[in-house]
Amino acid sequence: MLLDIQEAPPLPHQGPDPAKTTGRSTQHAALPLPRLFALHHSATQYFSAAALPSPIPNPDIPDNQLFISNEWHDAVSKKTFPTVSPAMGEVIGHVAEGDWADVDLAAKAARAAFRLGSPWRWMDALKRGWLLNHLADLVERDRVYLASLETLDNGKPFQESYVLDLDEVIKVYRYFAGWADKWHSKTIPMDGEHFCFTRHEPVGVCCQIIPWNFPLVMQSWKLALALAMGNTVVTKVAEQTPLSALYLASLIKEVGLPPGLVNIVTGYGPTAGAAIAHHMDIDKVAFTGSTKVGHLIQKVAGNSSLKRVTLELGGKSLSIVLADADMDHAVEQRQEALFFNMGQCCCPGSRTFIEESICDEFLERTVEKAKQRRVGNPFDLDTQQGPQVDRERFERILGYIQLGQKEGAKLLCGGEHFREQGFFIKPTVFGGVQDDMRIAREDIFGPVQPLFKFKKIEEVIERAD
Image (cartoon, rainbow, N blue to C red; front, side):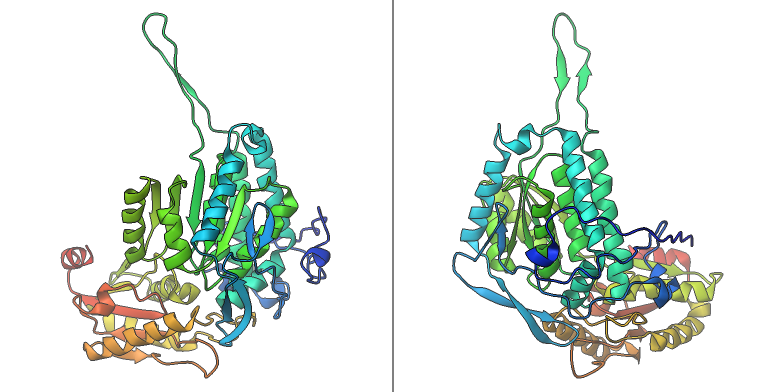
């Protein structure tokens, strides 16, 4: 593990005073930011609290309207919906509930911004990259606030929001800023007097349906690339975690991106999300979420305008621990692969196969380490595990734990609510799991670690596949 931590001077403010535009204090913007390199996703455990800035436990809530054509709008229906703090189980704000009419307005704004002759289509690619770098500057300036907002709305520990998520977001915008002017045409040799060449063109209006487990990170992956290549964007953010995306919209406006270039709609999947998949004037949809919803989006996209589709769906990733493995390292890494982000990852290490001769010892050490995991207030810098994102997921995970016990798996630790307030679940470990059990086959998406035993490597490879 290589960590290069240096103190950097505060970034100068490069636009309107955020205290005037958002009503929040700017006292945290001047904190020095650690620059982190070669950062593994488990690196937060190597940080002392002294290396991190103080979080903002009660960050001001950003604008709660829809962001269309660089302006804030109520939903056409005037409806709103609550966003809830998963750590407290309490409503922290209400957000505009967009639906078909709002998606249509956002798509029209994006199409207008993409038309030939628009400022965006005429813009030099180098300037596109400069604007993305400027957006990264503003994210870095407001890093403490954004990390605090992510922790409030999502429930992940602040140290992960700040060290991992925001670090990733800044790097993604800078990385794709560098690609903005690096896509080139080619000439192809032809017989006679013919001249043949290729030319890359942006896709057009790209819509992005963002998940709730890594709101800012997933948004940056989809947004930065689309903008670098000259597209316009409509984003539907997860109804569980809309706040950080809405604040990013204010930074997009501060950067000076042309109106209609980025449009952000908050709302529910069956209404706003479905409207995106069905819309006839959208050229591409990128979705991160469940496999079930991915099937629906692909089907609807094909039945509407044959729009392009990119899907990142759930998984049931596996690990195989052999008898000659470093036991302490294997136990630690398997738990990090599963319990990281409260088990809410698309590629968790949710199936661990242990060679029979070391299985008992591995289970014993795993249970011991799971019991030591610090669960609690996500704003506490020593916390390793926060709450699940909402009550629906919380109850779903507890349901899987009960199901595992009914199917005959042995509950070794955890398996219950951690405290009365919020959606906390104790780190849970199951032993004696069989391949045909539902906890072995289905994506639980929570802090539940099923452990399997095997005798021969040939056997486990076949079972794993």
